[in-house]
Image (cartoon, rainbow over the protein chains, first blue to last red):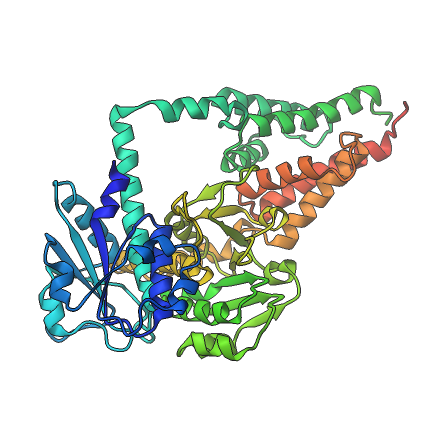
Length: 264
Length: 264
């Protein structure tokens, strides 16, 4: 299962100062389906502020591993990435969060692979020697005039990209003919299905006949107006139910006209 | 400039409870190059907690607009999107943050277009009637077992996608070596501009009055039907010209009814 790959990815916070941020990070990763958090020398942990900000993601905090050095955090990892919003003098190979999510999940295709993503201190990020441990750098493309991303926000963006990529891979797996269940499930919501061409054409023809009965259409053929109306309703991606509603309204106008023929 | 388009997008927080979240949101959007924040009935604002969590993004708080209702927040908007992590019983057209970022930035290609993104209360999100104001819903694909995204985190993800898309468009612009001629050309076609909320509401109210005159609507208030119709037309992203055509048709029905009153 693709979603299980996310359990092979650990988020490593290096010397976080504020316990509230640790809780917020736990929440960020759990919302995106990740679960593994490692703290290198946290200033305060466990701490009630962390628990409070975790807001239901305490399961992540309960399993959080505390270690004394970055080396200890990543020793068994086959791929290590460091995060940064700053430009550095020394340049590491750098990817944006989207590219790095693809890289990580592809890497996890192999058995027993483990990935670590390092996030630096709130005040000063990762040191150059910590970045030297990394195979590449994830650079979040922040506003150059104000790149002060909150720690949990930085984690959130990268966890989000991992989730998007894992969902894309799941969809791909399904597409590959593994199951047609999805299709069947859609089948039951029949009225919510998109209307087909014939149904859409039927509505437009019905509309045109009413507009003629109302003398709203005078030119024949009423090409331009009907083309505009067709385009308008095409933009709405009408469902079968919506076509039924619209035709219901047209029928109401039609029967009013029949019951009360034009006296002029 | 593509980056300036981000200034035409406002983040609207509906009844935020915690002032700290307001500050965190200000920080989130500024890191991604957005600047406009609107608060609907905040519980506490201004507040020292907001200022503290803004951490350097006070410029956003200084310009933050406080209004009394969602309607006031979005009246001049040509595109309104609502955010959600929940599945709803009624389904709105839904996009993920990436798709919606593309939609928003494409929409802003037209002059004078304004976009609002609504974020709901921390506890309960947006109400159904608030989502009814929206042309579509942005659904963050969170973990089904724990979708409790922090407010600033939800904003961060969407602001991040907007930034990624605007950077992609900038790169594209450079590639094309195009001047802004295309933009200007589009600008003169005023009637092709998206209708704003007031114009869209005017159409729906006109439609409702005709449906009542036709006895098509019997239940009062006709909530469900009108909600479905609102959603249907919202999906079409109506232009000013299209609203004019639809209202023209409604006026034709209206005058037919007046000229030929119901004889039954």
